[in-house]
Length: 494
Image (cartoon, rainbow, N blue to C red; front, side, top):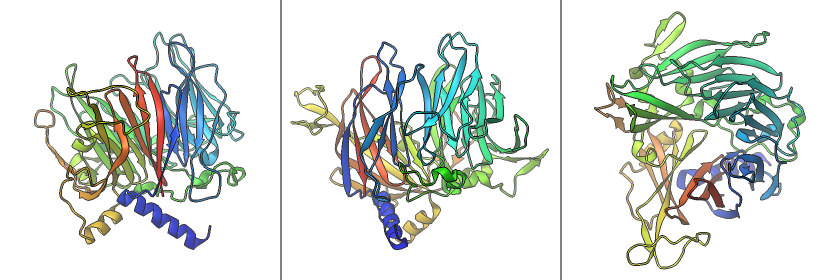
C-alpha cells in the first residue's frame, strides 16, 4: 500500500468513528453457547462450550475479519482443538500469532496452567519457553482471572491468590505478588513495556500504584514503586468493594520477532494508537455494609499516569499525587456508562451500549428473534440499541471545538441515527458517599450511533466492541440458567 493510499485509508477510518458513518455492514451468524469473546487487530475470538451441565469453555473459535489494509480474504474462520481442561480466561495478540489460555483453578485443582499457543493451529507457540504453572491448594473455585498481554509480557491477576508478570518468551517471572487480604489488588494495567499499574481499592482513599520493572537477571526481578495516584475518598461508612480496570494495549510492533513480521495469516493494523493516547476505564463500586449503593466510571488517558504533576510530594522516592492534582484530567459520564456497563477500549476511543425506551412493532425487525414479548395490546415489544463512541484524543476535541461542534445534550429523535457532540465531563458529588466531589475536567467527543434493525427483548444481551477499523455488535440470548447463546455478529466498517 502506497503512502497516499494509506493516508486515504486512515482518513476514511477516522471519519467512520468520528461521525458513526460506517459504509458497510456484514452479519455473521454465530452458534454454540459461549462465556467469553475477544476482539483484537481484526481477529474475533469466541469461547466454545463443552457438552455437559457446567458449560465450561473447552475450545476457541477464531474469525479473521475483513480488512481494508490488505488483500487477504476476510470472513475466514476456524476452530482450535478442544482442550482437556476447561479454559477460565484468555487473551490474544494476533500480530504475534499468540493465544494465551488460562486453565484450571476449579474445585479440586492443584494448579493453574497458562499456555502460550499459536492462534493459527493451537500448537505450542514456537517463541514460547513453555507453559507457566501456578500451584494452588483450594477447596473452592477460583472466582476470576484477568489476563493481559503486552509484547513479551503477560500480566495475570488471580482473585484471592496472586498477581504475576511473566515473560513468556524468556520463561522468566518478573513480578510475583501474593494476595493480601488487607490491601488487595483489584485490577491492573500496562502503561508500556516497562511500567504497569496496580489498583488497590482497600485503601482510604483507593489508589493507583505505578511500578517500574527492574529487568535484572534474577529469577524474579520485581519492580520499583514510583508513584501513587489517589482516587475518590469515601465516607467512613462506605467501602469500595471492587474496582475494575478496562484497557486494551495495542500490539507492540517493536517487540515482534523477525520470524513473525512476515506472518501470512495476520497483518499489522492500519492504525496503532500511541501508548500515551490510550484510555483507561475504571469502574468503582460503592458499598454500605452488604448493600451495593452506587457505581461510577472514570476515564483517564494513559499519558496522565505517565507524568508526575509538579506539586506532587515525594516520600521516600515515591511521588504521591493527590486527587486535586489530576482529577481535572479525567472524564466522567456515569449516566452514559453506569446503567449498562458494556465497554470496550481501543486507543483513545471507548464504546458503550444502552437501550432506548421500548417501542412497538407489528412485525419483527430482527429475524433472529423467536421469543414473544408482548405488551397489553398483543404487540411485540422491542428496545432499540443505542451506542456511544467516545474519543478523548485532545487534538480531536480541540479540532471539534474550533469547528463549533455542538455541546448541547443528545436528543431523543430516533430518526437521527447519527449524532455527534462534545461531552464535557460531569462533576461527581454523591454527598452520602464521597468526602469531596470529584471534578472531571477532560472533555470527549461523543458520537451516538443507533444500529438500525438491531433491537433487544427482555431475554437479550449484547456485547459491543471496536478496534482500529470496525465496530462490532454481538447479540446473545440469555437463557433461564444464565447461559448465553450467541445469535449473530454485526460488523460495521468502511
